[in-house]
Structures are given as structure tokens and as C-alpha cells.
Image 1: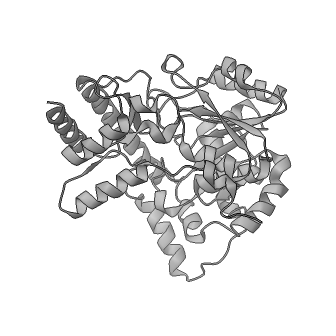
Image 2: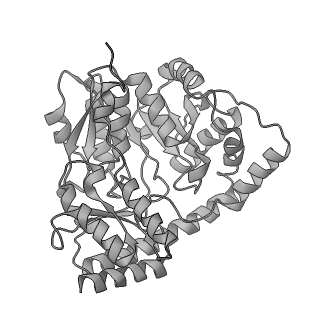
Length: 386
């Protein structure tokens, strides 16, 4: 007799921070002032040119299905963006518009994962990645990454973990929760190693555009056999529009199209028409100003946390997170996060969500609120530590 739900569900963990967020909302409903540093979402509104494009499309009333792989004109605009920003030529036929980066990862793993195939992921890392692998009967294998390598994997890590069951790997640069970047020579070496092993490399680039000392290089520079996941959520400030894209090797085009047709039919038409304005010079000017504001916030928050007794052992060069070691303040980051919320109204994400690599020693702080609020949060924590 079959048993339900499917056994794989036992291996798919909840997003633990959602419980903390629910508690934060409950506190806010009682009138408490909550400073949200747990949410990986820009606080800026969608840029006006994007809103105007969406409104113009919706006003026509002709809001219909689009092709499963996305509007041809949007796929061409994304290809042009790669030429402008990275100086590389990507044919629009390799670009798939998706229902957010999550939709892109879903399509990629549906296409690539076999039952029992092993996929290398960084630990700490974005928690949903391992659940995407498991959803398609793959086996996620965490590679512990450490501050001395900026919380990014090395070629030696790949050589140590790769075996006959390994099918591929999923990396991120800039990474969540650490905000760190992979160096170009390391990324190129890893891409070459995975290729030599006959495996498949996926690279999450959803925080591209949000790096501060140097621009992140796209993995597409290191081969046309790499899957790249991107999003309109982070740099483009379109989280609720649920739109992203996937760059695929040409040979997977028909397979990905079949999956997209069956799983999604098509991405949101209003969101796609809105995104046509995302690459306009007026929009990019707004986004670049916001990038500098994120940098200002990072540069304030890092020293503020250090002064409170947190340690920041890695270079957070991108995204909008600081992954702080709190071991001098507590031996249980989850309990500490909940106590901090109750006592001060400051919400931060405990390391539990991001893997098994000393999660009890870490908190993730998102600088997705203004410097004034960050300063207030630091003062509240200072009083709490007393």
C-alpha cells in the first residue's frame, strides 16, 4: 500500500526563518516597532519606468499567455544586457524567462536531476537549493565552506567531494547568506573540473548588480555549457513580480521548453511587459543609485556589529547580507535571535536555515532598511547586551 505524502517530504525542511517572521508580525500587530533585518528583500519600490510599462500593458486589456520560454522581445533584451554589462554574446535562444529564480531552479533540476544523483552545494548556502534537488529525487551533498576561503568552495573541495555518483554542482556568487564572491580564477577552474568529469554546473547569479568593490563576473564567460540562474527580484527591485530567467546550454532548449510548457504554461505577462523597461537607461540610473545606498548601509552596519561583539570573518562584497559570527555572545543563535526579537524588536535570521556548518554560531543580518533604522537596531542590541 502506498503511503502519503511522498517520502521525499521528510527530507525537505521548512524555512525556519518564517516562524521568526510570523512572530515578528505578531509583535508588530500589538504595536511593537520591529526593525526587519531578517528579510532578503530590497526595501526600495519598483522603479517608475517599470511600473509605467506594466500599467501601459495592462491598460490594453490584452493580458494573454506568452510563449512558454518568455516574450521574444524580453529574451532579446536580456541578451542585449549581457552584451552591454559583461561584453559577451549570448543568443536569445539560450535565455528562458521564468517565474522568478525559483522557477528557473525548478526547471533546471527537473531537467537534470536523476533519482540518486548527487549534487554538490555549499554549506552555508541558500536553503531552498537542497530542497529543489531533493524534490526531483536527487541527493544534495553539502560542502563545508569556511571563512579562510571567504565562504566559497575551492577546486580542492570539488576534488575531495566528487565521486561516481556526483552529477553536478550549484554555486552562488554573490552568495546568500554570506555576500561573498567567487574569484574568477577559482570559478574558471571549477567550471573546467566539472566539465572534465562530465558533470553539470549551475551558478546562481541573482545578486549580480549588487556588488560593491568589484563587479561580479558571469560564469557564462567560462563556457557555454553552464546553467546560469538570474532574477529581476534583487538588483531590479521586482520581488513581488515573480520574474527571473535561466541561461541554458543550447542543447537543452527543447527539453526546458517542454518542462516550461507543462509546469508553468508561461511566466506572468504583466511582469514580462514590465521587465521590458528594466534595462532602459533611466531604470539603470535609478538602480545604480540604489546600489550605492546598499553599499553605504553595508559600510555602516559592519563596524556597528563588530563594535557589539559580533565577528565578520569574510569579505561581504555583494548582495545585502552580513553573516556574523555571534559565538562570543551566545552558543545558540536560534534562541538568541528569538530573544533578541522579543526584547528589542530587532529581527535577524539564525544560521539554522543555511546548513549544518556551525549554524549555532551565526546570524544573518540583511541591510535592507535605511541607515537610520540600522543605527537604531545597533543601539537596541547594545542596550540588550548591556
